[in-house]
Length: 144
Length: 128
Image 1 (cartoon, each protein chain N blue to C red):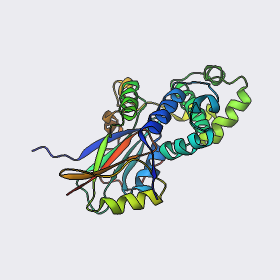
Image 2: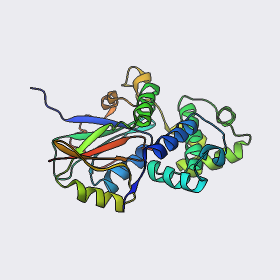
Image 3: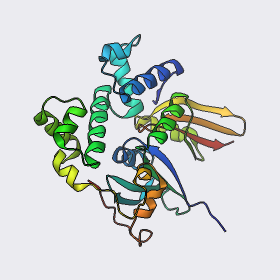
Image 4: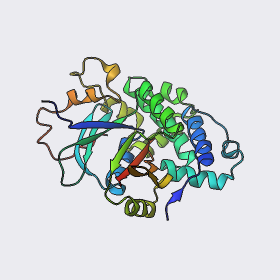
């Protein structure tokens, strides 16, 4: 039986997600509002594949990845995304991404063939960075 | 002559999106190349090579704002056709997919809406 989400619940949970994406630090109970926290978490996870807590962590990790990709230092990134300890930040980052912040920082770079780096994320211009035989290549290559 | 070969949806997490679009929806991976900190990923309908769907990272702030606004308004970002919508609703429901609209007759088509877990509402439709 499919989980069917009514319009009111949908709007509430979508609003909670928007708050988390914006970096809202409210507690789960506060976020749930009129919903029971357990139901909110269950619906949230079905809609987005992660719990609210996981999304909150993911937002921090994504911000950290973006800063590191632009060359920001690990300690500065740690403070920037709201951690007080570089050790706990590094441990969490490693658990989520499979590599340490410093390793991640060294491993990513914007392809030189893309002229305007600002269009790289989320753009079909990424096609320009593919190998010349991309249509024949069939072996999926995993990025870090 | 131009032909439609590629379209895209923006996704919040490319790895999670690839898993959902292949393992849950049933598409197959056509391309998967690293591009800087992201990946160029396309999927397609199994055994058909006419159109690929790129799973683009939504890191562009303008794209992210558009995606979030569309989702918040309950507007689907893409529609996939099926010849048996009720069966797909049943299959996807068993796989844990959350629907915001059950199979509903809308004149020339029957539609249903679900969350793809990476920031989009997706419509499936069946011509009636």
